[in-house]
Image 1 (cartoon, helix red, strand yellow):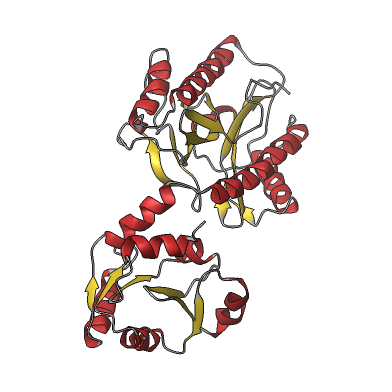
Image 2 (cartoon, one colour):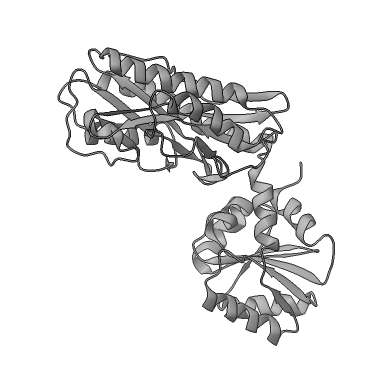
Length: 359
């Protein structure tokens, strides 16, 4: 299988020896080379890909970066200028969305001074986005590896949930255990909310203690080898009321129906509508966010299960399905899985149980 750099180079440059592409954003540098750097650039030419790094990164990059020639620079602009002249480059595609105006103008001046035109449109951005939106089998495997840590952490944390323990204590144990299992880090700061805080869908774990009769919502994910996982489970302590059970059952029904609706070619907005219709009938106005988002090299990618995203589902897309009901000051429930779209439906990458668990 061709590397991410080879695929992007073919898409943007297409073998034209006079064209180049310059990637500078930290996320895309990591995605394309498998080597993270906070300061550097990737110059793609028809002949070769150059990863331009300073002394701090060059040695490690030579051992770990994939598909590139590592060039150590003292002055980045001088190194770019030298390579433009070496390959007689006449046009350079830029990362339009990643470049602040001042930096874009400096790169434009640099190109012009070396006989090339800076292409300041979305050509390169669109090509990278189109490539990242559909995951390769290797990428899906890495996401599954990250999710395996998340599933194991959920199983681990359940015995820690007891009366008097705080949201913060649960969140800290989740963070610690994921790292203990080998995660490079958390995909995001864990969300742990209980009781009345459950209506805060992105609430910050605090000193609120867990009490019997509370829902506890935990939104967690691991990051491993650059790829992320994302899962939410809501459990209860001791008992639940009939109202709580009805809320939970509605969210679960919406989630299962939405997953069942995912097929190649179905607009993302239509999948969102399936879950929204189930929730909005009995609980109008309580589901205020989109149904899901792409996951991969970033925790929030493309596409989105949203009323505003009509992107057709395509095989290889990895997307969350996470409906919720949030009743201000009272309680909240969210259930979230990651799925990968297939030709005839989807495959669930999340394996933790989601029937209501009462501890």
